Image (tube, rainbow, N blue to C red; front, side):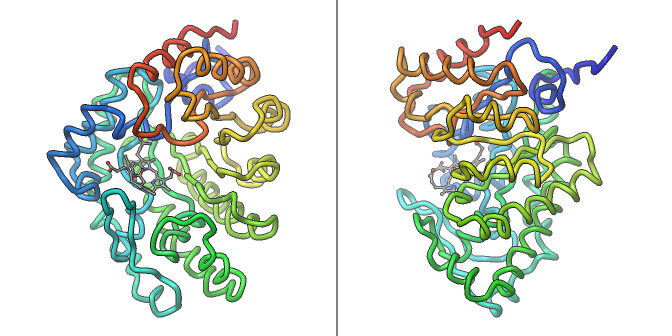
Length: 349
Ligand code: CP3
């Protein structure tokens, strides 16, 4: 048979195989909008500790799958585990988000310990093993990491930001010094994702949440080039494991990013017109996206009309239905159920 199914819709969509309907999953599908997540979170208390507790992390990874039967589970972890494992001080403060001891010069960079990351990250690999062993056969497990640029932006600023001025200034004034940080992150990310794949992840995603703040040449240098290194090295080791890139906010730079990095799928955010994505991207890569997370808060006709608009534009090429960014905590769980049913009932043939 030509191109037989892998047995997983998500993998089929990423590897040019036919699917009966588009696979779907939702960014941040494990999270505070689910009462069963809040229960586990309250028991453990600290978010970082939850990421490093395999039984809890595996449980919350599986919760949305049990409720909604998505085609993929995404490992429960966080993109800032890499700075934490490198030895940078990190805490998550209630209502404030992550706070880190900033890394802004060569001395702070030299104090990081790349050779020690797997000691700290071992529980994450155990979570992957547990989830891979517990998922239904047709459901894929997505491993993930932040992209070097986005992770670096938190490391340098010390917290979330809208402009990332410290990071962009360091990159402009001292590209070699900043490039050394990007190189450390690139190597750590390759090793981290490799271990996730060895532990049982069927695909991996790189979150470049802050790719959208960069000019053309800076975007190429700090987003596209490191992503290409990561994808190239993973492909040498694991040629059959698809890689999804999500350069949020990349807009018209996305086609070049998709072609140059060698990714198999590209995430698009809510601002990208689905028809434009179909015509400029689907000949090269599978497209993943891009319903506004707030449409799922609104629910009803608003959500359904926007979801159908996306399905009509994108489901006739390689496509994975997702949101344009993560589910927000105030999302009613029953709206996620209605959206899942709508996608499950969609037929492309
Ligand atoms: O369900 C999933 O998608 C898997 C788990 C996941 C989390 N974070 C859990 C999480 C994934 C894939 C991420 C990625 C992540 N983390 C990104 C990239 C995607 C994006 O949203 O742009 C970024 C930038 C982070 C960093 C981060 N983690 C921030 C800024 C925050 C605080 C904001 C917030 O939502 O509270 C976190 C915490 C975090 N990561 C939570 C979850 C479920 C909330 C923690 C809690 O329970 O209080």
